[in-house]
Length: 76
Image (cartoon, rainbow, N blue to C red; front, top):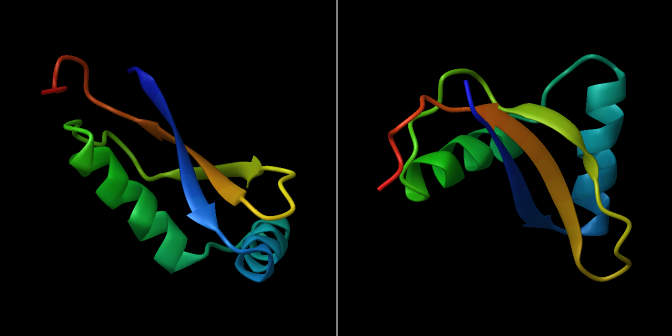
């Protein structure tokens, strides 16, 4: 399955909270659902749940990074 890397805009506080939850083995449901919606918005069908992989180091423009497996051939 192809893997799609998503960059979701965030603020520093939310990014830290998502990272902390990930380190505790938990999920931040709001950003995970936002990643799923972004996959659909880009014309792909998700083949699995979004997986949090990290945050960017931006001071002002922090982004959450998610990987999502998508079904091949579903892009518009």
